[in-house]
Length: 195
Image (tube, rainbow, N blue to C red; front, side, top):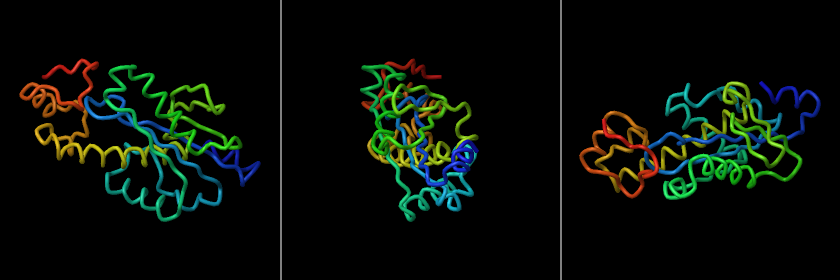
């Protein structure tokens, strides 16, 4: 993993990793998390890998490890309205910047999954979730917390099954859009074709 080279030289060095979730979703916010870790926490991160390769239960377990061990993290979101007004790229950049800025003090090495941002001397890592523990952990935290948001939204908009599809364009979700139209949390700027 990419952090290991840093820690070989300086095991006290903090690494910040950030990742977004919800970029391609039809509804709800785009969210990002950043986490801040150092070598002493490495033993806690054995099961950390790409959030898409983990079950929802395993992601929750890892999130609990983060909470119980006071691993520093942040979570930021940009609403569907923000996305409609400023575009998905700007919204993506905003949530990454906001999440990192909450943790950054100036001395950390910052890694971002694939996306290039100008601040923090951030390093964009291709396939970051596979190559950087901090990014992988950030992706897990972001996914767990955004999924919770979408489950909450499903209480207000039950017809879209957001608790299951988390806002993504499944066949069932597209059919619901065809049947009921767009809700106030759908991204109107996206081409949300029914089926």
